[in-house]
Amino acid sequence: MPIRTRFAPSPTGYLHIGGLRSALYSYFFARKHHGQFLLRIEDTDQNRYVPGSVENLIKVLAQVGVDYDEGPIINTDGSLGEKGEFGPYAQSGRLALYQEHVRILVEKGSAYYCFCSEERLETMHKELALAKLSPKYDRACLKLSPEEIQTKLAAGEKYVIRLQIPDGISEFDDLIRGHIKFNNADSDDPIILKSDGFPTYHLAVVVDDHFMNITHAFRGEEWLPSTPKHLILYKAFGWEIPKFAHLPQVLNKDKKKLSKRQGDVVVEDFLKKGYLPEALNNYMALCGFNPKADQEIYTQQEFIELFDIEKVNKAGAVFDVEKLNWMNSQYIHKLSVDDLTALCLPYVTEAGKTIEESLLKKICTVERERLVLLSDIVEKIDSYIKLPDYEAEILVWKKSSREEALVQLENTRTFIESQNEENLSSTELVEKVIRGYIESNGLQNGAVLWPLRAALSGSATSPSPFELIWVLGKDESLSRIKQAIEKLPSTPSSP
Ligand code: GLU
Image (cartoon, rainbow, N blue to C red):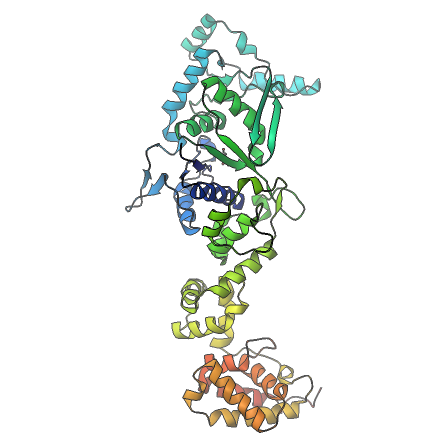
């Protein structure tokens, strides 16, 4: 049987980075074993459904390059469609299948009708809490005779269906956590069909994983306590149980579960901020698994080849945004200038700034090494478009004086003025001529280059003066040097 894995998010409106990691591991595993990976929408909780979230999910998965073989798709006309032979791939489209299987369980005596009202359950839970007992359903409805059930049904009483948890032990071998045993007595009789006719997660996940031929179910560790219920359901149906891999939680720095309330957990937000999908995937994949101790940057293909579920950590993985930032900058450094320019342009436009593409391309060339996020470009372009206001002090090299800065700037200006455009047509050429000028005049590098760089950028930290001259061009460079010269005599004597 081919390996089949799935990513089964609930359409709550956004993709959590922990969800992205589950999707990646399922995807790597399926691709590594030449199996299939599918997307299933777990929308049985209609109260949590956020309109448009399925479309959003499909788009985000496409952006991060996680392609699935089966599941919901967006048609060319914008409507939702599906690909694959095991659909529908949204649980809300499979209600009849769940209801039929609930009937089977009731007939087998593995599940039962429960007509208890909310009020009764509440009172019962309160009493159990007072007696310091676990809030388990007391199985009052299990005692109902078939006639009593029929009478209640005929009277139109609201009901749910509960799974009867048998006595005994449920155990399985988790691919990450090893052998796990549960005492069934710790489990409540869970509701598997709600009064609105929708299944709960427990029933739907089992029915779907079975009918979609899922061989390996990867999911977050928070689902581990539900697994005994699922094992009991598989047994009740007489179905083969897929292999489970419960993935470690993604934690914040305080080692608590990373939640949306803490801000940065939404994949869409990371992408909007200017994280590259490849970097985000790389970082999230490493949250819990690193194939090689001495490597941190992996392509998707490498992850697929090297993925080994048995090497996924049991312990929670701490999400470290500094590390993610570092990784993103590494990916940005590797981009071609053309690609980087194309990726930066939307951020510039979005910020309401206008810039010639050729200038943006030059800026990207010299700033590439300094960008952590694509959106950083928005700030970077300002000083190229317009010289910022600055204090004359920044023009003075630490081993020098204002007078010397002034002399050097005046001489350098004359020298640059004498150069033809060809000599200034690349960073390397600019560097060559200016270094030649420094050498032939027996000058100190810092004495010339420091004031020049500060004059060109209006900042104490910036790319080299060679890069700046190339980006700004001869006229703008000369004008900026002139402005620096004008600043100097008007300031008090040397510091
Ligand atoms: N629907 C669950 C979620 O939203 C997935 C659980 C599973 O993969 O079994 O996380």
